[in-house]
Amino acid sequence: MSSSDLAIGKMMHSWASDMWSYPRSITGEGVRQTLQYIQDVIPSLKVHSVPTGTKVFDWTVPEEWVIDEAYIEDEFGNRVVDFKENNLHILGYSIPTNQWLALDELKKYLYTLPDQPEAIPYVTSYYVKRWGFCLSQNQLESLPDKKYHAVIKSELKQGVLNYGEILIKGERKEEIFLSTYICHPSMANNELSGPVVAMALANWLASQDLRYSYRIVFIPETIGSITYLSRNLDYLKENVIAGFNISCVGDDRCYSYLPSRHGDTLSDRVAKYVLGKIDPSFKKYTWLDRGSDERQYCSPGVDLPIATIMRSKYGKYPEYHTSLDDLNLITPTGLWGGYEAIRQSLQIIEENKTPIMTVFGEPQLGKRGLYPTISQKGAYRNIRDMMNIITYCDGKHTLLDIAQMLSLDFTVVKDIVSKLYDNELIIYT
Image 1 (cartoon, rainbow, N blue to C red):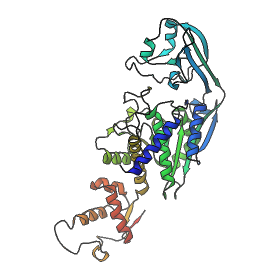
Image 2: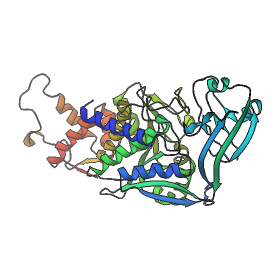
Image 3: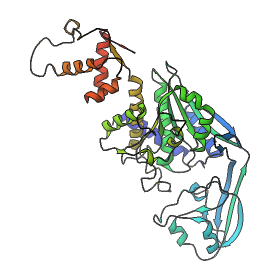
Image 4: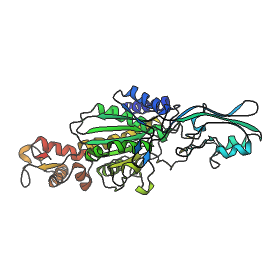
């Protein structure tokens, strides 16, 4: 890992640190704060607002949640649980309350993880109105059997659902679609890693001469992707040729892949190829293991070519959806690894052209300086690769197809085909 690569990783980690405390949910000010931060880094981000009550396929955009304060006090006014100390302490979308309760009664509204007694769980109730607090099992067991004052100053109101969108135009209308979500509060791998990696990818893409156009969306999970699809589905189905859902890409433990519903898209093939080069032992999941926004992008009738590249998959690491998924779990090297896996995938998609020979029969390589003039052991190894590649330059196979059929590195195939192109032996269809 070079110093410049590490600098990219540190930059992403600093972005995550900056956005750590924003009280994100599927709607509300925490989402807007996050989008404003991203827009400050990437001014081309456009923020969209969809009003409460808007019908989006089989769903409806919910009321906006406003949370000002939430705490539990003991009889002496000491706050034993406080939303301001950790925004995971509140049950997401809690309705307001202000009441004194005995501990046994209060426990009905408390959520813990007995199997992880030091962790605060992440719990939400988006579509059923209730209130509650989340705390560690150790904290719960330390509470004396007294009365407690539970206060939640919140509001569910007519408002908007916000999402952000970046379009980076290339030479062609066909698009690569990248999606990540911005609805999770203070958790790092799930899900500040996704937005910061998407931001770094946006910066990299903006510095490239691109063949394809790139659309990157920052949305609330599930309701955000459904809302986005309801407004853009026809366009996406016509123009998107590949893409990735970006989630859980920040730790150092492993690489993971989850396919599209059909598992045979360009995105799937590229993801498996790249991860196989980076880490041959990467974890392969099936469509039945889905759980993020790939559910929406690959649902029947939508069927966009979207796969998911991850480090430790959501739901498969012990800190998932708890306060233990903190800024120490993600690292600059882990973030860079997630970024680099997706970046390499995008680069292959960019360069994955379809070559076709311009001559009939076997080309005369010698007169073009492409054939060795001295016969000795090993001299023909590269020529063998070139001739094997030539046999598949028929306008039916892409560079990635050829690399996989011949068990060659993609860059080797690309470089050899570039020499053939320079010598006018092939064109790209």
